[in-house]
Length: 147
Image (cartoon, rainbow, N blue to C red):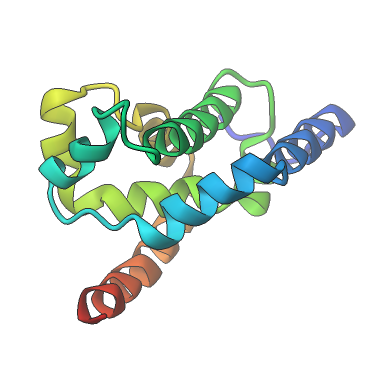
């Protein structure tokens, strides 16, 4: 059940999540994962995700685990779903970005982005935000593909 009002503790968690996103290495990792990494197949995804020798492997793991942790906090009631959704879009962006290859990724890694997916499935605000983000990602994917 979704809560209508967030508490000051919810706000503190959301602010802490924001502060963590501004850490220098995390900013670099987020810039690469959201802006430069556009795999079109699961094989392209796993070429980075499974390759500890790839310099981007740690960035990919850092960003994905961060957003899965944040989604888990909502799912376990540690932070208001409405406040979280209002203040965070990047986790939804990542789920939308990998949507075309999500099933293929999950064939090999069944836990891939399951918390973010559960968040979208459980909370109407998250579902609405995801659908809005998905449209933007699809348009962006078309521009990236033409570059």
